[in-house]
Length: 403
Picture (tube, rainbow, N blue to C red):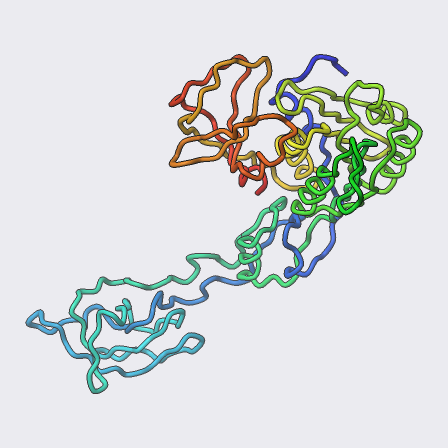
């Protein structure tokens, strides 16, 4: 293990290389599969839509019947009514069919005219706006063809993906089992919300944040609570965590202080493969192995823990879950601030967009958690870089980091 901090990109690549995807999978009802990862490709057994159908309420007709020989709008008798879910009969030449959105097109019809462009009188209709052949028709199979792979293995199932699965008729899905993450928290100075706050102590915000991040990601979370700042207690809880879970995650205790026992406990029971990243906030980041479990140690400062989780731990966990890697999308915006003092480490500044400009939270301390509640993204500033107002900066939306 190198004592020199890794670059952000090198640390992420190293973690992803160490992440071994799950192989165990199970069958899950599609209605309960939100957030799960598909373990095998989903092939559709149906065509969607199954037949040419109307894209809106209106009248189906033959384009050739639209006008009479003089080129004037013609009255066409309405020969049938076709609601969605029913099949019409072949459309007789010189007639129109009343049709509703989603209803199959009757044989012979080759366009649909929206009802707003039609005049109806005594069982006949005419239109004043020239239609086009094929207008307002959804073609059979334009979404899905029978035999088509609609979702690949490794797809994380969100609302849109579950909608596609339902369109393909899937009531059950083959998914990887849930990844298990055990968490515990160190620090004699922290107490749980609801308990008396004696002098010198603070409430444990990292527990709430980390468990929420893991739950949102779809992991099975094993909360082992708080650990006294003692080496023996830390070793005991770490051993228990590694036996119960695929991944052990904690915050705090990963630096080199006399009261920082987590790193030493990992070295007692297993090995450490990565320790520091050249970034701010969040220099300490421990990755190692304890038994069969991965270990990830986050910084103790709340903002550092959140940013490190988003940039490193989340992609690692997604890879472990069997999901395809999808790096967070970023874009360039003008800086609405000055950053005159170049830092020695790559910095991720809490910011939000206002009228297209990236504005910084006034206090960038790694202990100011309210800055993350205010921000909607991070501004990525390379080590040694200065920023002047109006300069282009790289903005990473939190929505991308948490999607």
